[in-house]
Length: 406
Image (tube, rainbow, N blue to C red):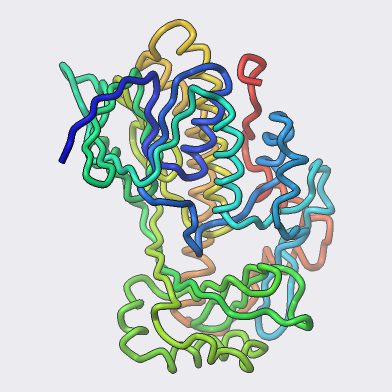
């Protein structure tokens, strides 16, 4: 293999929402940045595709919102679930004073291509596809770059700052030696596609039945469906065969009974191992992790993209002035974690609460499947639906671009 040496100000491992957004924000302020994405394109089905109102606010601050809305998308104004055959609304964005009172469902590959297109307008932005980080370069305990591979070429990229944004299986996090605390999750998810018909429910929702949960994300002419199972049960379900899986799906969402045969083999079903964890310290000299690399989120509430992009904005607000003064110091990197610790911890605790008190109990099939009292309150007092909508849509301590970054 040939070897190549490169030098830049910032090298970001991972071309997901956090990495691409941070790369774009730095590049537009004149900072030389390289983003590494291990795949040849952004097309990976069954990735999170929820663009929350808080992200739309950020896109508006960047004058990108009008162009963003030109992407194919579906607007969801309410979040609900079906239990015991009855549809119930949990969150209603229309009852809030949020500027953009809906969640936009946009295929993640479209969103990432959109951000990449904007970033490529700046000559100091370098996106390298099919390039995977493999290790860190250190000098006297400080991270001064990373190693990567591209086809038959090895790269040594020297950088003033390395950012790990390479997801929950982060190579950067692993090589850094940063301590991870795992909080566990009672479930995993089997994702698949199934066609959608005109008389189907109009918006995304969840089906909750004793021992079974099915998440239905509306994608115009098809459903992106997630069958939630007890942790460690995926192998057992697969061993029972695809026909048995189709029966599980039909029993949970009977309206899909006329088309479950579309699921012909396990090749059409992707397993997602659910994790909830968090780094004790996100950074060390010359390195910081953001997004899932710093704190893996549960899929509950579709909060992962929202939190990741908020991380990117918070990071840019600190890093842009730091780079203009020279090289970001460890004290600068710690500021980013201090800013983001509270919202990340709060949202993870909320996810863990719902996993333990609702999802875990339903999947174990304990007792009668009853609507939790707090959900009953949302049904009886309609005005309460604005609070879960705000928590999901905006969240605690939402980020905005600083004047220097804007």
